[in-house]
Image (cartoon, rainbow, N blue to C red; front, side, top):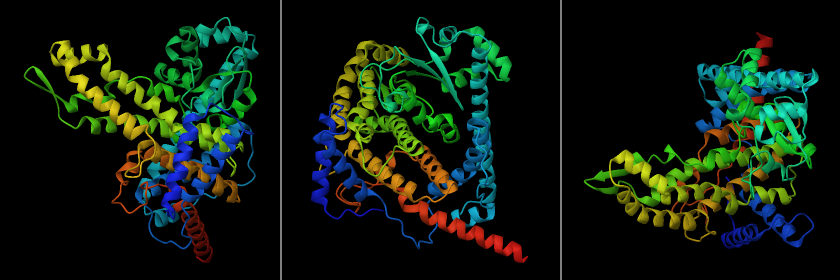
Length: 500
């Protein structure tokens, strides 16, 4: 774990970065503001990045162990099975394929669980192959005479008058539309909350039913599965930077997102609406004709917000890993890194729907109907609740860095700074495809299973972890030592087999 040496310098740098990102209006490289912010990102990233203890022999935490085991199970599919089918590559060397005994010994996971993880990797690889079949089937329809605009009208009826061209890549089919506004790749691909109106995308319930029925028969899938396949396969992208977007989307088109469950959708789909995720039945109690709250309103907001915040963290992590794959992630930060780190903007997409939900008359009517009381009873009780939630959002979530306790924005910013610094450095140090593939998969699996609540659970003035709490960097802290131990154990097993 990285050690904070100069707390005052850390506070100042975090405050400057917070202020600069909040005031930034999409300046690009070459401006003094961007250059100064990039300098802060580089310095803080190195400060938070964990430096691995080379000689460590202790057993990793279970979450780290399971994530690395999943990565080792997924790697051969990406390098061999999906690599040949999706990209046409023909790898000359087989992946390392550590023996189950070596993995169990180093990670402390029973062999039966490793077998289960491999079964899960097999299932995900099968779904990626099915995605590729959908792409091939749709492209074949174009090759046999279906007009591109006709296919676009079947997939997205609202764009039926648009001019489109189609490109197929692995598990993705891109409809390139000149009429769409050019955005940054992260926004187009749905990893960053958009600034302004969101770009259109394919929604399964709007897709032509005849097309779905034919596709269902052609690939041997259930109707519900076809709906999921179409939404995950077809992307509507602007023509202005189509080549850049398609290159960045290798995270999806090569099967990485399907194998990890990270970054396989649009962040807005998970964050723009609020429903039963609030779990209101657990913390609202009807006492006679009055509503009572069983839990502290601010704690409820933190709990519900954290569930939504995980969706954001998964999406931003996928965006960072996608830059590793297309080679645009460098040690020197750029303006796109600043877009990723702008949590003052990102967290608004997390908290604003919750604040709208608590004051919405539709919410009051629905809860009143469920509880069997008059709508005015709910509305009156929610006035105070709304005030508590707004205060918590402003002070503990969106607010600037504080000396007494870190806010959610500060914790997430630190976390992403550490991930960016460690991933870029270790990617540069990777000397072979196996290590590089496993590194990316490990980050994705860990991020998918770890919850953001862990960051503030270990934060505060009494934790002894620095002025702004705890930063979790499993990649920098664990990956290199564990990889070295796996290689050593693998070599030892081979020697024992040869002598035997």
